[in-house]
Every structure is written in structure tokens, then in C-alpha cells.
Amino acid sequence: MLRRWLLACLCALSLAAASRGEEAPLSRYSAVEIDQTKTSIYIGSVTMTMPRFTRKDGAFSSTYHARVFPYFFSSEKGRLSIEISDETLRKLERGETIQFSGKGFNTDGEERRIEGRAVPTNSTSGKIKVRVFVSKKIELIFNTTYRFPAP
Picture 1: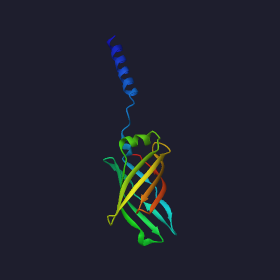
Picture 2: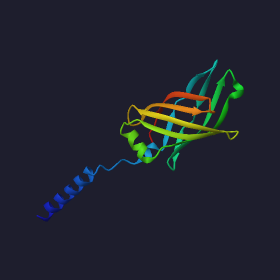
Picture 3: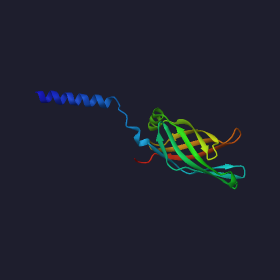
Picture 4: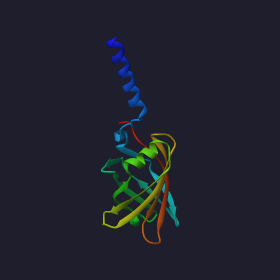
């Protein structure tokens, strides 16, 4: 009799925990890869390459290399950081489109404001549109894809 009662209690506790909708840990979103991307400029193009972004304290950070063709002297390197809160990551996980912002700094210390939108195709990848504000009059728009690699 006692065994049945304990079994019934354990089943009830298990169902209660499952019905609360406990969320999966966000550790699977600790890094993101963004494919190389290219955009057109007046008589040329800009190719942006970024190694894997890593997440720390609510921000994804990485370095970048922007190659400008044929104006090679305008190419630059630097660091960038994108703010994405835990709540925003949960939206992305549920398949919702998110907006984000961030900052970049080239090796000369010049700031680049960044804004963008991510549209998931599934819980680990999707499309991304990024606007990089180089100056008050110059804005570069990059369209590419992202994916969260397996931990």
C-alpha cells in the first residue's frame, strides 16, 4: 500500500515539473557562426569575414575583417559586440524574429554602430540582416546566415 502511494506521489511530482515548462539551458547558444557576406558599394564591394562569436554577459563578441574592393586602402579590421539578452535568445529558440544592436570598433578606435534582425529557420540557424553605420552618410547592409554549432 505504501509503495503505491509513493509511486503515485512520484508520478504527480514528475508531471508537475514537466507541466511547468522548464526551459532548456541557454548554454547551447554560447557560440554562433555567421557566414562570410558581401555587399555592393559605389563601383566596388565590401566583403565581411568574422570568426565564431562567443557569448559572455549577454553579448556575442568577435573580430572582423572588412575587405573593400577595389579600394583596398579602405579595408579595416576590428572587434564587434552584439547585445542579445537571455529573453531575446528564448524568442529566437521559439522561432520568433528578433531585433538586435551592438557596436564595433576598428583598429584605429573608430566606432561602428550595428543594428540587425535575425529570422530563424529552425532552433539552430536562420537568416540575418545587419546594418553597419560607418558614418552619418554611409550605411552598409549585409544579408547572410547564422548557425549555432553543436556544443
